[in-house]
Length: 309
Image (cartoon, rainbow, N blue to C red; front, side, top):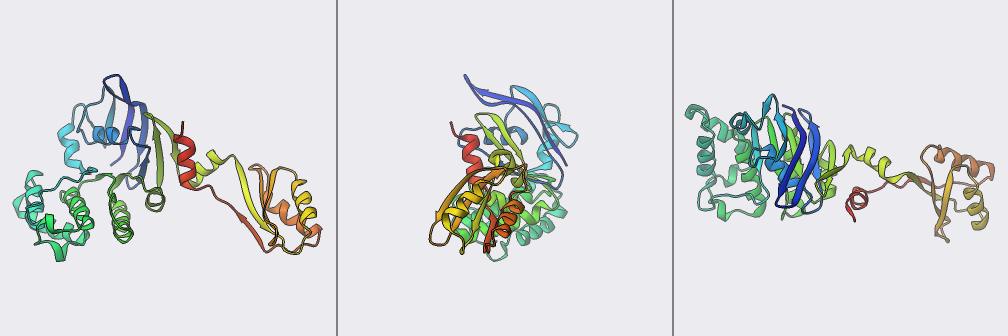
């Protein structure tokens, strides 16, 4: 089930939380939704779930509009909000049965649905415990289970790994990737490495506007502008190697990062085949290359560049 956001605008008083944004998420895609605090992420996700009404624009979940088919959309979406509200005095199994009844799952199907989500979310050993007795990681699993119990085609997950330790984050990541094979998923997170490892595509929003949309490698190319290579030529004269590298067509900057090891960083035009040119220069001068590797722009660097200021 696709999600299509068209010209979405939402204001709180004089502040525009979301300013005329449009994007599409395809069925089976896991979209990483990034942005600094106050950028408009949660507002957009709440609008998709019909939790709030936009001032302008429309959102379609499948063939349903949030303006005319809110009840049908709610049945198609599983939502895990950032604060993960749970009834902590209830045992896990009773809480999931309660959620299933709210979703109007036929009584004859509830037990099978519960067994399925308990197994999927790894809650078998914890299902009879009160939710308040669980660790943060298991509470997040319960939150995912309640979002999944009615077999929704769309999952909206707002900061699903917040407050978890590295082992718990890894477990939740694998769970989301597994679930995402069959569903359309929008995942919001401040853990950028987590988004990069989990999501098929990344959308970055800042001050209510979309500032980037694409796969990580595409965003690197768009924001970096230059290619950067790390080159080690241990048997070369430092000055001769520096001048030879700087003379290569398309090279804009050469830095010496380790004089003793003869390691250089070479920055050049993306339009040029810089690795080949560096290799040919070394062959021409009878220098042995022991390292010739691209230096990739990190997602953190992309995020900072697009959302600062």
